[in-house]
Image (cartoon, rainbow, N blue to C red; front, side):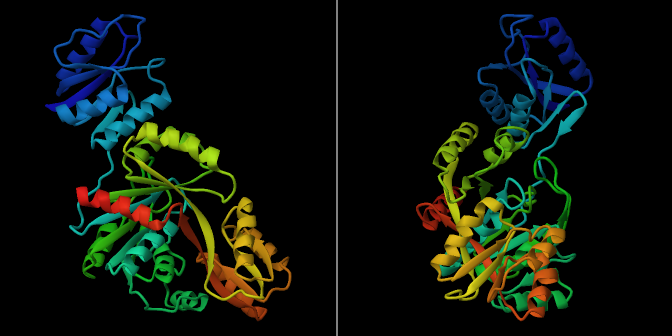
Length: 432
């Protein structure tokens, strides 16, 4: 018999609900509890059933029933208008967080497989999407722990990751565009996150690949487990497991940092399976745009706190960190950052002494990038992010023109200090 919880409502006649439960029993299910979602069209009270019936806030009651009755699956016997799509996805998120599957008429969601791959303390850094800022946050955490004398390594996965887990030891190669080109000449994808982490964090990194990501962040085509095993052979005290796009690290972790931009569509936080990501996080880091985002951050905090009352929410911003001195020089910065971030980029480099700053935002669009580079005015130094197009297009363009090339890193500046973020993570680790 498969243990299950059922979701029922008052839009169905109680005898119909009872017949549905009998059908489930005949199909091999043991119904250990029911959550009454409301609705008064067919009844004004929860039905009297031969199992516990929970009433109240559906998300809270479902979470309590999962913990109490240990089901294998939640079976949804409800319907609109009691349970609309957003409410349904929030309940799916509750079930997945509890490690329980969720199914209804014509669909099924299973919790991501998160095996225990290591006994070393692990911190997941994930994002709500591509370029949310997770790599920058992972680098900032690794730097902090490195400077504190901790032996830390980062395991990444990416759509451009290596076929076999690849280890880059701290200080193994030149942290420069030339160093990236040398890696590319060795047949390596020089713009994977593990390379960027190695360049800017100065710690051991391991690169793996993944293909695809489901709505809960699960990916089943990857070599991540082998990457964690390779990391374990380096004897670290702490591992940072970095997500990729919307994909989460396919491993059980001890703490979880969720990174999101301030301009994220609220539907991606409160709708779909956004609640699952929020509910499984220990800390949320919201990257603002450097402008007056106080109101937007407060609105986002309300949504995040409703979904996860135990979540610590912190804000952060970016600061440009060039690998070359820019004092008195005309700078061309080539980036994936959106147009609205241009003013901050310019201000950062101006504060560091650049005499003039021009910004190209098309590093992730190769067709547009070629035209933007040709339109650039005379410059003394070109700064570019660690991306595939940096090696393939930007470096050859600059070399042909005799322009010095350096790297730029979007350093995360946590409001109140990185030590606050680390203290919260370490508190979670200590409890685990």
